[in-house]
Image (cartoon, rainbow, N blue to C red; front, side, top):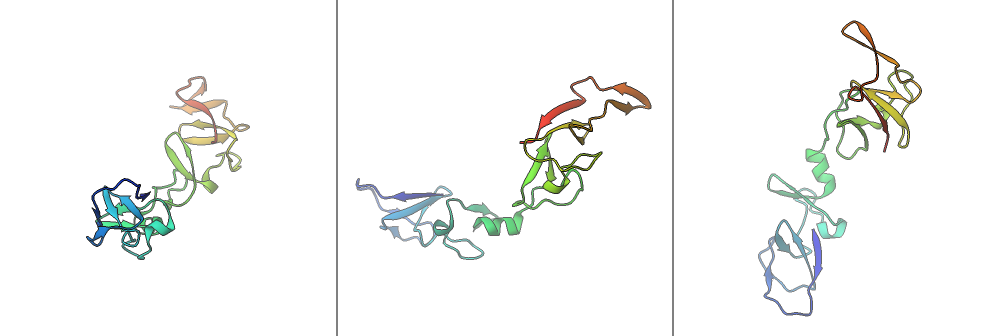
Length: 159
């Protein structure tokens, strides 16, 4: 959503996508490839004037929505890779190897210490270990193998 001020250069009057009227106001909004009066671009659910509550809006299913209503209606960013529970779209997450985790679930599999941004960790076959609990050997197909392959072990830093 772009809030524009009409420049000093005369231009053809624009039509509002909301009411269909000509936009002669000093300010206008441009959203979803259309122009709007500031009073006409409203959330389909709560009727909040979107130009007054932020610089972005959302569109889905023919509705124009504020961030709060979009999250309430359509929001969740998938399931936590540790506990399997849903992660709300407005919740902060930790990510490793393309997986998302609740903040409380992003912890060492051995000591259960919660990992924070800046901590180093090891991600081994989908399991997270803190720097101190990195397994030295891995049981695969009933054989004990040393962890040497970089494809099996990744040492990462939480960002």
